[in-house]
Amino acid sequence: MSNQVKTQYISSVVKHNGRSLALVSLFSLFILIILFSELAHIAELKLPLIFLISASIVGVVIAVFKILEPDYSFMLSQEGLVYHHKKGFLLIEWENIQRYGIPTLHQGMQTHELAFIGIKLKDPEKILPSISLRLISHLLIEQRATFHQYLRNQAKDLNQSASELSLNTDPYKDKSGYVYKGLRGMFAHRMNYLRQFSGFDILIPSTALDRDAADFLVLLKQFQNEVVNNV
Image 1 (tube, rainbow, N blue to C red):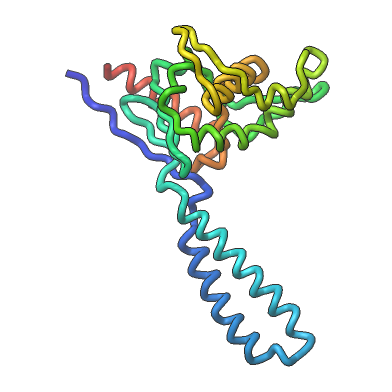
Image 2: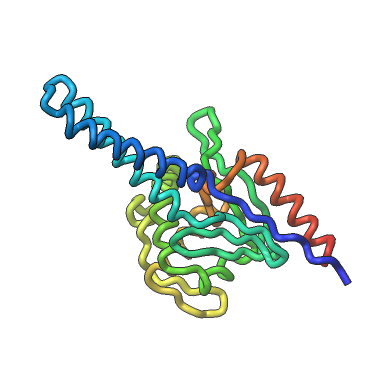
């Protein structure tokens, strides 16, 4: 019998230092409010204190968003790659992954790496029934600017406007004949367009990682090989 591969968890860089930032910001806010109550009558100190209080409030808000992020953004398990987000999660089974890499964008004679991890699926339709609508909505918005960059590069070859392609609400019929409508249909069309323009079906931001994107890809390859060898 093969041994179970040990699950690995990856925390988002966005999650890091949330509690520390909250403590520092709250302490600063408390001190600044006291100083303001004592020194607000001094005209040259009033505006700087208001600015610092505002900055501390912003720090508290950022800290709250950090703390509310999931404890881990990726889980690498025997079953597959799981992307965790506060809007939901996405499971991509190892056997459904054709390749992964860093998507690039050609601008003139130059090629730029984008701040995403790209995943090309063998069967993109397989993930449609299980991905949550909230996560679909988030991904559609998150990828929109990058998607439009690809569209601008392909403008001369397109018969539709960028808005029509970006917000394609036509029903999507999968190979079994099942019809997806609404957000799931839009997401299916978006995956098709992304595959055509970038070579990947799914784009996940590198801010979801705890390391350099290239290092994460090495980890994915090593883990996937370990899973395959233990089947």
